[in-house]
Length: 215
Image (cartoon, rainbow, N blue to C red; front, side, top):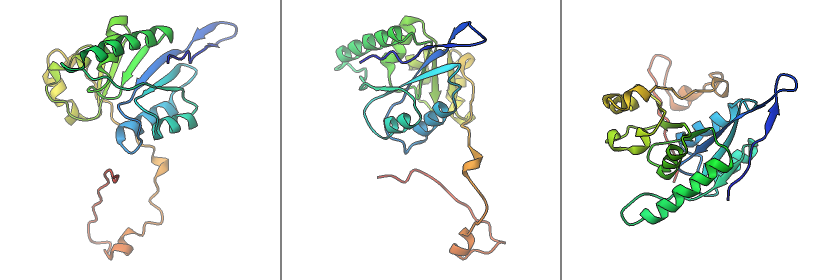
């Protein structure tokens, strides 16, 4: 299913200026990982007068529900990987993506990870739609990843993640670190009872680690 999700908006009197249409593709539909949370933060703070998002999810789940709360349009379409055994579904999926980009007049494709939706990367390349790839984890054999080769911008979230990308002469010009933002207002240092609960006095260094605690 393809959706026409955006509309022209009046700007500066009677002049009509169309907002840029951005297709964001996420590799999964859960919300417990940093990849999905970064996407939600991005969509929440996007200037809707300038950019109109459409999020592509592989299945129904928590992420589509959160997007609904943010009044962000989305559609569900499964991922077709490219292997020797599954090249035919991949080709069909690539042309589905071409129709999606053209019918919705997409101006920019944002892949939330370089290992997924390679059919969408091919479609963006075919339609000459700029492709941005957000890289959250180190990429092995980056030079062999054609999704990265077609990207207009490659955005690693840290210098460590970007090391192999910079090591490639072909990928280096497109690679720019963009650190994940943190909304500091969500966190407070008042009423900190951790030391009392753990029986640790003020003179003892206290280290904390936060990771994914999910089944």
